[in-house]
Image (spheres, one colour):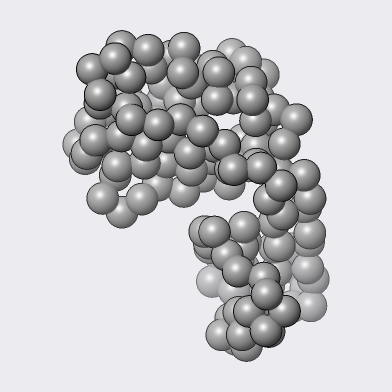
Length: 132
């Protein structure tokens, strides 16, 4: 996305939520998540980790959501039994808007005016955002 007026819109996505106790400083959790999804041949889009490191959100195609949840439940069976991992689930029927803008506040205000609210936001360049 190089032009300042380019907008990308993706439909039929799901957010897979991986939640548990404080993972702060715990090495290998992210690697296990991505290894399990890779072995299940699931393509991952946007990744977001909560600041307190008690959960991770992963964007996948809606067709892969059930399989993604199942493979993560299998991978983290012991942690689920112990309570370290509390929930693994998907939020379906999600769309992604990717855009480049000079003034993000204007874009967010216009989206809100049209009842479009973000689940989470990523920034990969100074002026490039993805809203889910």
